[in-house]
Length: 231
Image 1 (cartoon, rainbow, N blue to C red):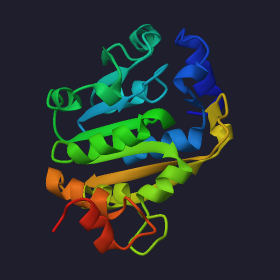
Image 2 (image 1 turned 120 degrees about the horizontal axis):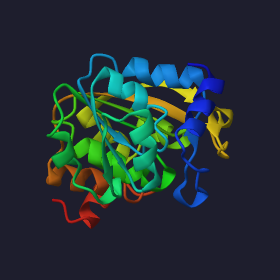
Image 3 (image 1 turned 30 degrees about the vertical axis):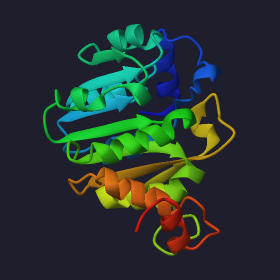
C-alpha cells in the first residue's frame, strides 16, 4: 500500500486531525508500514497500542485476532469502519492491565505499536513484565530512545532499560522512520525495533538491582549498590 493510499485510508476512516496534545503522528510511509507488517508474520494474536485511525490495525486484523487499546475515543468509530473485526478498548495503555487483554488473544501473540513519547518508558516496562505472554513485540519509538534500548554491553548509551529489555528479549533494529513518514511530521526521527521474547521476565529483586546499578552513572557500581541498600 502506497503512502498516498495510507493518507486516503486515514481520510476515509473518518478520523479527525491528529491531536498534538496526545502526541499523535499517523504513519503514512509505505516502506515503514510494510516493514512493521513483515515483522508481524506468523502471529495469531495482536495487542496493538494506539491504533488511531487504524492504518496498521486493518492489516493486522487480516493476519490474526486484534485487541486495540487507545486513549482517544475517536479511534472506536474509525476502527469500526476500517477494521470491524477488531476489539477496541478505550483506556490509557500505560495504566491498563495489559496482561488481561493479552491472555484473551490466541498464541503466538505480539505486542505492536507506534508509541507516543509520553508512554514509551511505561510500555517498555510492560513489555518486559509481559515477556512470558508474548513471543514478540514490534514497537516504533523515537530513535534516540531506541538506541538506548538496543545499546549493547559497553556502549555509553546502555542503561537499566537496555539491560532489562535484553534480559527478556533478543532485540534487533527493523528500520528507521524519518519525520516525513508521519502525518503530521514529528520533530525527531523514529525507529522500529523487533523484540523476540526469551519467555522470561525479571524478578522484582533483579529490577531493583539493575535500576540501582545505573542510578548514578558517575559513581562506581559498588557505590550505587551500597547506596541502594544492596549487600
